[in-house]
Each structure stands twice: as structure tokens, then as C-alpha cells.
Amino acid sequence: SILDRLAASKDDEANGMDIDGELNSLNLKRFMVETKRQLCAAYCSIGELYLTDLCEEPDAENSCEAALKAAVEIDASAQIESGPFESEIGPSPPDALQTMANLRLSQSRVAEALDCIMKTYDRMKVGCEAMSGLVGLATDKEGVQEAKARELLELDAASTLPEYGFRLQTAKIMLECTSLVDDGNNNTKERCSESAIQVLGSLLSENDEVIEVWYLLGCAFMSCSPPNPDSARHYWENAVDMLTKAKEQMEHSGEDVACELEVIQSQLEEVTKKLDELGEEMETK
Image 1: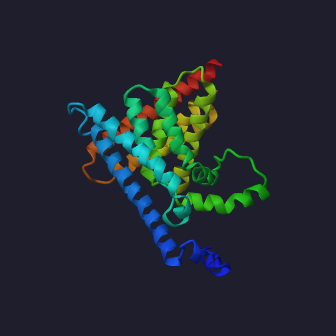
Image 2: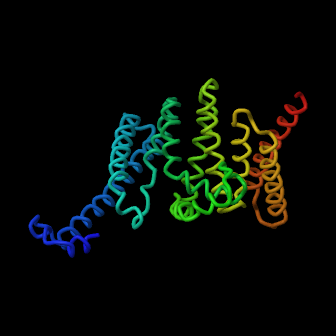
Image 3: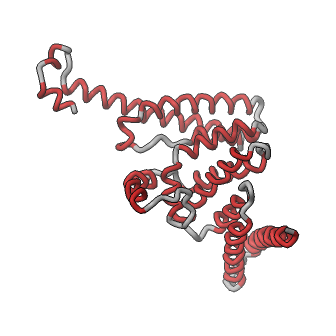
């Protein structure tokens, strides 16, 4: 530590080192990391605008590309420099990589989108797997001792996970990638599907009343190579039950919820159709 070095010898004085100077240097480095994160977030916001509200603007794609390339570059720099301060300010959020994955999908550059979204997942993998394990979706079949050894690390990682909506969007991008990636590359597709399950599992652990998460988990299990129809059926049936209950509650609410009921009915029909198709597939095998 700084104090140990100061007390150990007089070499610090000879080297022009003093405690205030080193602390000021550390504070400056931390300030630079935080500033880079803010700048990265600003570039991400610009990129997202060109992907959505400003997508019809002249040269929107090139402007989006430039903003997100800058965001990814700054993010990489902040990621390297944040090491000494990560316990204080938390890990760098992977917003730039996720937004770049969105752009690559819009450009039909699926392999690059997949690379970006998997790098996004790698930044939150430990926390997602820790949370996912709470709802029985853990991938590692560890013994009790091994699990206990990882407990503190996982607890810390879970507490610094990106917010709910970010993880949900990450899972959606992963599933879109699996639907587009070349079927010949089964290892890549399988890893992406399994990662989506872990992300969705972390969401289910945090809040098991979001119907969309149950539905997407069913989709994720069917995107595996080979598909897992039994698990897909479990999550889709739960989604149907939840949608049915939500519909009944709205119908008896006495309020004007015609639009909401129409949306729920459409969702109910979509999930029911998937279950029917799944049943037909299993009967033919």
C-alpha cells in the first residue's frame, strides 16, 4: 500500500514520490475512467437515436456507425483502466457492445452481431449464472464445496448486473442471432442459446411475474441444438396460464381495457399456437 511504501524507506523522497501526489494521481485516473464511461454512454445514446427516431435522416447509418465505433473504443479503454477502481465504481456497463450488436443486426451482419452480443454477455456472465441458478437453470454442476468457493464472487457479480431492461434486450438480441446464424455452426448457436437462457434465468430470478420472460425462455430452449421441447413446453404453458389469468382479471375489472385485452388475446393466441405446433412435432416423432 501507499502507507507501507512511505514507512518502508526513504527511497520515495529520492524518487520525488509523496503520498499526496500519488493520491492525486489515483483520483485523476478514477476521474478519467468515470469521464470515459459518461462519454461512452453519450455516444451510445447518439447511436440509438440513429437506430430509432433518426433512422430516416440522410447518412443515418454512417452517423450511427461512427458514434458506436467511438463508443466501443472508449469502452475498451475504460474497461482496461477501471481495474483498480472497479470495486468502488462497479464494472463498466456493456452498453456500447449491445448497441453495436443491434446495428450489425440491422445491417444483416449476423456474425458480427453475434460476436458483439456474446462479448456483452461475457461482461455479466458470472452474475447471470449466479441468479439463474436460483431458479434451477445453472449450467455448472458443481459440488457443494466448489459452489461455496464461488459464492462471494457470484454475490458481488449479481449485485452489479446491468438493469432488468438491458438484460431483457440482450436476451432478445441473442435469440434473434440464433434464428439467423448458419445452422452449420452448431457450437456457436448452442452457446448463444445457452447464454440467452442464463440471462433470462437471471430475470426470472429477479421477477417471476413478467410473462415475456417465460415466453422467451420457451423460445430459447427451442433454439438449442438439439431443441429441448419439454423445457419449452413448461415455460410456454406457464406463460399461457399467466396470460389467461391476466385476461380474466381485466375482463372483471369493470374498466375500459379493450385495447389491453386485444393485446393479451393476441399474445395468448401466439403462445397457444406454438404449443400446438410443438405437440404436433412431438406426435410425428
